[in-house]
Image (cartoon, rainbow, N blue to C red; front, side, top):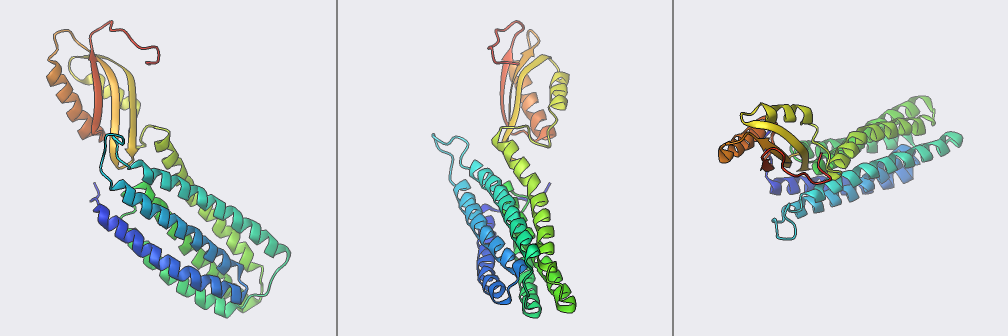
Length: 294
C-alpha cells in the first residue's frame, strides 16, 4: 500500500507545477513565433491548456479539503473527479487541434529556424521534467492529480518531439518533420488521456471500482456464517482512493446474532475489499422487496 501524501503537500506540488508551466509557456510562445516552429507553438498552446488544467486541479484539490457538512455529506471529494474528467476532455481537444494545424503545415511547409527552435525545446524539456518530478510524488493520490500529471507528461513528449524535429530539420532541411512529429505527439496525448477519461467517468456514473469484482464480493458474503442470501448489492466510490462504499440486503438465518454478523461483514469487507463505508440491511426470509431491487 502506498503512503498517502498530506493534502497540503498536494496543493503545494500543484502550485509549483503551475509556476514552472506558466513561466515556460511564455518562453515557448515567443520562441515558436520567432522561429516559425509549429511544434514549439503547438507545445506552447498545449502548455496554456495545461495551465488551465493545473489551475482547475489546484482549485479542486483545495475544495476537496473543505469539511463534510449537512448539505455535502460526502464532502467535496468529487470535485477532483470532475476536474480529472474535464482535464481528459481538454487533452483530446488539444490533440485534435494539433492534428488540424499539422495538416495545414504538411500542405504548405514553412521554413523553421531549427537551431533556435532546438535550443528552446531543450530548455522546455528541462522545465517539463522538473514539473513531472514534482507531481510524480502524489500522482497516485487522486485522479485529479493523475490528470494534471498526464498533462505534464504530454508536455514532456511535446518537448522530445520538438527536439527530434529540430535535429532533423537542422541537418536535412526537411521542414515537414515539424508537423509530422506534431501529429505523433497528438496521437500519444490522445492515447494517454483515454484511461483517465474512462476512470473518472466510471466514478461519476457510480460504477464499480476497478479493484473490486462484484461476483467475488457476492460469493464472499455468502460464505460468511449465517448468511442465506444477498440481493440489491451496490458498490461505488466517491474517489478511487477515498470512501469506497457498499450497500446491500442480506437474508440472515433465523436466530442469528445480528450484531455479531454485521461486525463480521464490516471487518471482512474492509480487510479484503477495501470497502470502508457499508450500509447493510439484515432481513429474514420472505421480507418484502421494493420494485427496483435486484
